[in-house]
Length: 393
Ligand code: SF4
Ligand code: SF4
Image (tube, rainbow, N blue to C red; front, side, top):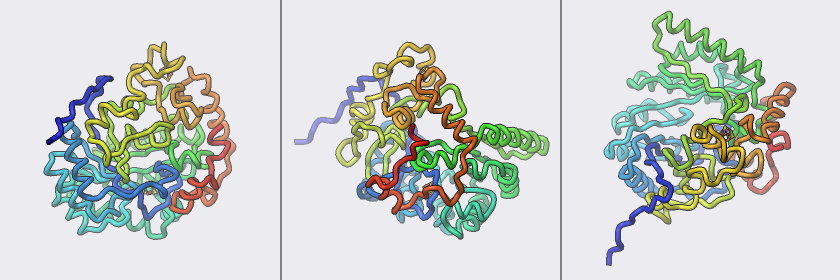
């Protein structure tokens, strides 16, 4: 006898999962020391099959998902990427490929276009070939990225570039912007590292100083004016790290409110970092996405505000920022229900102030950073590498 269709109870009036992030694989040929992948990525379970991913895309679309990001790791490592893009197009998604560009070829760009891919974002490590390749852990990375950025533009896509900035490259933001102009970029995200995954592990060696940030923002503003005066449509988006804010970001626009991430092994998360939290998350191999989104423990756990402690519980800003980021609260205080320490009202805000002070005197060279690869990931899993005292206290 067929089982009755599942009817969600939706105890917390959850919104629709409009944004689906499909982390297809944790495999990646690069080794960025600021990678936001979980530290133990190398010990996660087997990747979902093509059929399982197609099922996820179909279920999420039925539930209202409209935007789909293919990410990783490096999503190009999946040989079925074209097929998944084609399926997503048929289902009516707006699709975005988030890639390092390594493994991309002109013929793949063409194939993805024919399959219906809407958007490609290529990330760079630096404007300088030597620094870029040192940070990426690959001698060919920069040349490959340049060639592929040009191929993406030639195929008629808007050119969307992403530069992750940190204390080792932010002083060259003028050169980064010049490179973007030369490449005829349409959108450039100048995103200072956010401190999750390997970036958190390496925070002491990556967090820029306040003076570096202020200078970089001022330089960006000068370029914005120049671009506008020249009628150049290139948009520069400057993202500051929340370590220099006094209020936290409204993380994921609210827990389990809009964003749904499915990791390579099928674990469903309200944000791509949430796996590190000490709560259980469901897997698409065991549950339908409806059950997961509306009724699972993991997705309901930080919905609403009944989980909050003071000062968030009685704060008149709680509907604006939802108490900040649960992962950041957990990483910095050991308590995922605490206020995000970025908030100046948090009694743990001193940890953020201490990190800013440490950035003033930090002296960690590029080659002393911990790079993201299978070996370091396994060392993180078995406790041989732990976040430095500086990053956790
Ligand atoms: S941040 Fe770097 S190492 Fe991490 S997935 Fe992206 S390209 Fe790979
Ligand atoms: S106390 Fe909590 S809710 Fe209020 S602003 Fe700070 S993080 Fe947001």
